[in-house]
Length: 367
Image (cartoon, rainbow, N blue to C red; front, side, top):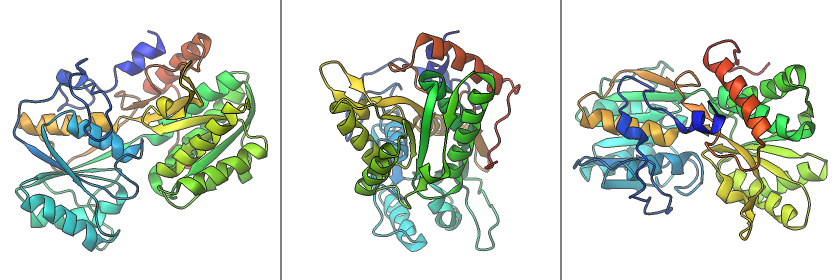
């Protein structure tokens, strides 16, 4: 199977609660805030679904936006709120506001919600909570997933690995960089997989890629576009060819820098994160040329869609912790990769299948 077709399958059947309707080819609906076409078929339900934004913005072209697009494509009644601050109290106020507004299916994207969700799942027992990249945590640091809550995590290390292999195969020889947002577990897993992917390609696929310590930078936030652009400029000036940006809105700054350089005839590539960021990297609208070489995808839109479908079918997996991996097509690279050759795609497909069947194991820890 061609890699484009393989990764287009996304998560059909990813968990027992998923429905084939989740992989509908319908594009009749669009996210009202981003204009993104929907890959899901909107459900005939009066379920109200709310989203609380943590770090970043709703249009970060990454994690938050992916969650939101999965929601708006699936249900008619949706609402997102942005807390006044970034404390447990701020998050609980936003959760409470959604609950009081009859939005009793609440999605919280990010580890920052762990303590707030621990409180909320007990305070609002008739509501359902979905936390992505985290799990409800009590004051003693213990994970406590209530019967009305689902915790979802992703194998970011596998996504980073496969994106690194794709980029290495396409570039063949050069210098890579990594721009992280906050140094949280999910982003560190991206870094870990990225480094292993480069090493794997060098040792097994005939590439010669370097990743110097100076070119691994955590900016400290997910919403500082200016800082992201400055860091990217410094990397490119040092001779870096490709930057993997696991940094949300901060990463948009790196894409902006790469586009400016590409417009001037320079070579500056970016690996996107969480969602397919190809369109964000377009610098020539006539040719649709983009600086996005590929993207390391976590199918967060599919995850939110799956949980909403499960709720409407009476199969919400409360109390469970779900992991979206290569084994269930929960991560990958885009279905379409215009900047990757067919030769690269074929080889990446082979490596992806090795991860999927367990022949190649990617560690979630930095080596």
